[in-house]
Length: 405
Image (cartoon, rainbow, N blue to C red):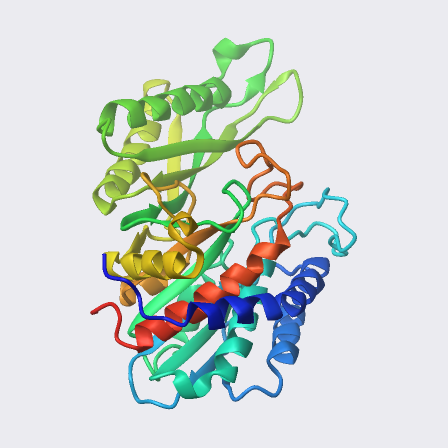
């Protein structure tokens, strides 16, 4: 692998110099988390953080997302750097001084740090604008947690002029060693689809089940049959996850309800397996119910596609991380993760990659620390300095002609 020509000292020192500002921004966002596509307070904080920089700001009608464009001294290529900004709907139990002040919302997926690192990179790259042979697009995106924010921003045309030639994103991980970057070529994260099954039988008295068609045991049988769908229809060397996360049926102890419903998720790493699972859920639910004289209605809502990383940008990320932080600064992930990301929409259109940056709390065991989406998830904020440096060095390297795309 060829050595990367990049000013490592410049970007690592810039990251360290901007760490205090990044921490302050992260904590301000963390204390006022917002959900979904509408995050006006967060967007306002980002605008204040970018005030005075030579950036062209753009917004669209569908979300409170913000695109900031930095045009360098040359007319070369364009790279997109992305950070998501929305929180999760859960109560925070971290005990942090800057804990969430919004009941029922928490930054439990690190999006506050993603924004802070990207804003820091904007400051550092603007300060070195003359050395950039091309354009950098900073994409501050709401609605990642199931709301398809990236897709809406793309449909609003915010990434059309200039269109990016490559894209890169960072995602914090409290279950990796602090400051280490990791990714892989090909599928990195899974597709995420939601299914709902409504079983309709015949209600009646709980003491007279023979006079009813009880939908509750039928729903339970469907749950078990769906697990067999995965283990017997998906090859051992392929991946699929099917989880029933919610079962609802009945109102009291002595009434057999007329209906019962199931809600769950399907995760795959391949479009062929994705289709197979969709067809299988429909078939299994319908026929199990029919075997008992009941009816099952199945609704499947397609979510994020598979997050697929381009090998050329992954290689560039590896070379960049190792140029900045040595050989130990990078790990190649042996297998994908079954979480999902709407950065996948960008990667469907643009060659690019997402990399994780380890942020296990100081002194913590990354194997046992609370993970993403936990109400107790905490991070080592100092790694944001490395995240800022990584964004900057990736931009410089790509605009200097590294990675043929």
